[in-house]
Length: 134
Image 1 (cartoon, rainbow, N blue to C red):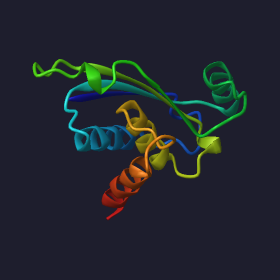
Image 2: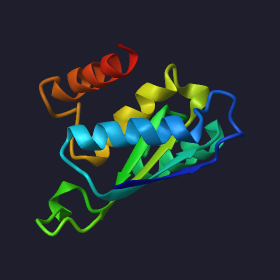
Image 3: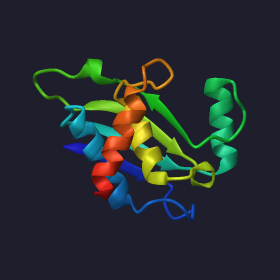
């Protein structure tokens, strides 16, 4: 089971209902072969995400989504012990598509990186979202 903790909903007008956030996280994790894990998704304002972006990426400006991996996929074992994937922080005010931000953040927690791959992460992101829409 993927345990998804959704924080900060209701404060941001573009935030997704917690049920949809959980569905997108479970879909993304399942596609990557993860069946047991915990993830936290938090919706924050522009000031908070700029603060986090400054602390962790030396870019003190608002952004759409940040991911903070903890265990990652390396922690998976045959005993299927749940892992702590990490946290996804989303600023709906700076996000064109909040659903895309959820999937994007999850893919980062699951070990993918669009800054170093050959387009695989963003292509998978498009495929997953197309499957949700289709």
